[in-house]
Image 1 (tube, rainbow, N blue to C red):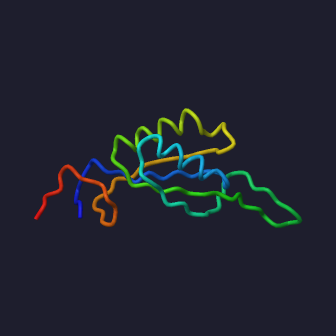
Image 2: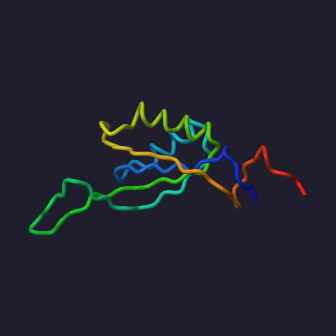
Length: 113
């Protein structure tokens, strides 16, 4: 288990539904090894209504745990290719990862016991 590393980030990418494969390809191009894709729905300032029923927009959220440099490279590529102006309409952010198990990534500060 890795603990208290500033080197690892959880990258969250929220996109319009149907574009996850394109974003996963971009994450891999940036050096990520994979992502988890979650179906979700979004609610913003503007709502569409049909016959009195509010329609939420379908979204997908990708979560990827990666080294800080890879997360930054992925965010740069997302900004260049899949920003708010594209049909993918991506929004992304990172959060620090304090500890992790279950992924096969070497950690520089990990001690072998």
